[in-house]
Image (cartoon, rainbow, N blue to C red; front, side, top):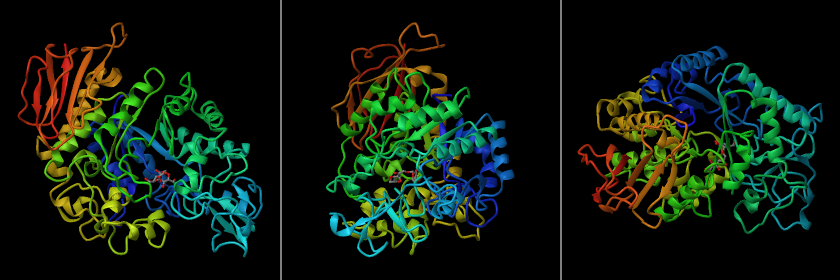
Length: 578
Ligand code: TEU
């Protein structure tokens, strides 16, 4: 299970069964064969719990109920069964750090009932005594308890008139943070997790799990850093590993599960090793942000020049750093990230080649590849103004009038930076066909968010009928990885760390490995550019007998040995070396 693919997706954008323009569980169940055809062996479902949808369902009002938007519990069970019948596992997104402000726990907390201390409540401070800005909220002359900023913009504290105190919300004001130092909170969350395991699911993606333990006393962060230093002050807090270990023992132990924890901020390899646990008694793996942080400016919407060597350095660090200590997750895309073809590839002339080249990287490294809906069809980024319509229809923090909305308009150079980091553009409906509404919903329905205008050319149906498409290339990559353990478990060595175009590396499974290994070395060469580039295989593989197992150009040479060659733009080759 470790090495194979997961497909992640936003249910509201995947497939609509009832013509209301919003994707749903019945739509997903009806596409189970598609997932099996692609070859993924697990599905990570973004939240489908009952929610006022202030943040795409990451604001949960009831962890045990399915939101009407997506269907019923019976529909959910039908999805589970449809996947299981095809040997596809189901991983649920779980949101432990915060609830919706409409959750019964928060309603009771704000009136100082039984869950009075379940959230982070604090008194305000004298506005004249602090250096940070007060807000218009709260009593006159009172500032929030500290200077932390919400990751969605604005102060991280909101004043509650009913309780007459401030509560912490690291995301939207409708997402109050739970206080995990309270044992009853942890027990309640473990109960919710067990509920879903008892329903027969196969794992969890744990949303911002590394924010659960807040620093004692809510110390203000460094005002010279982005978000006033909140992103440095809060993640990986003092008791976090205690909580994860406890969660493991209380919920995950003795079950065959996949647990992946999203870890934002400066989570490094050593932190990740601790999350996984010395004896595997933690999470299966984490999502870190080191590589997706490349090319992002200081301000949220700024875009910077980036260099391939920087991207390599991140992967090198994680590939070698976790060797023998933990397992990597491998991803570029998800519901929060701009489409990788537009970001690190070429969404113009070399869309097909660059999409396949980047996919080759994800499928030939040590770890678990995650593919985000549409990625397998080579989806790129629509212009954000198109995706959103005017006014935009996306939900959550980027809504108009929010802090992000204000930042949008400040971006220099038009929509470039905005496109680069908006979350809406990756959430446009799945492009199934070139027909009306791209086959996502009924022809006369209005999709909840506008379709990408290129769906007439770029869609699953067209991709599946073209043998040399990105879609078929993903299929072949998935099969190749399944067939060759060296691509899953082999040690990674980068042969070209300083090259700005060529990324050439080998994977080696050392002898004596108990697994059934048919070949013990692979050599992968990627030309990460639109120019021809010379590939010089390292001494260890040069001249060795080899099979060219995969190449993203249809006319591929089939040499009996790895020899130097001139790589075509975005050419990717995978050799299995004798
Ligand atoms: O994301 C955590 C997170 O920090 C992201 O919001 C990220 O900073 C942002 O998207 C910029 O790229 C998780 C979920 O994946 C996201 O969808 C939720 O909005 C968030 O947590 C709150 O639950």
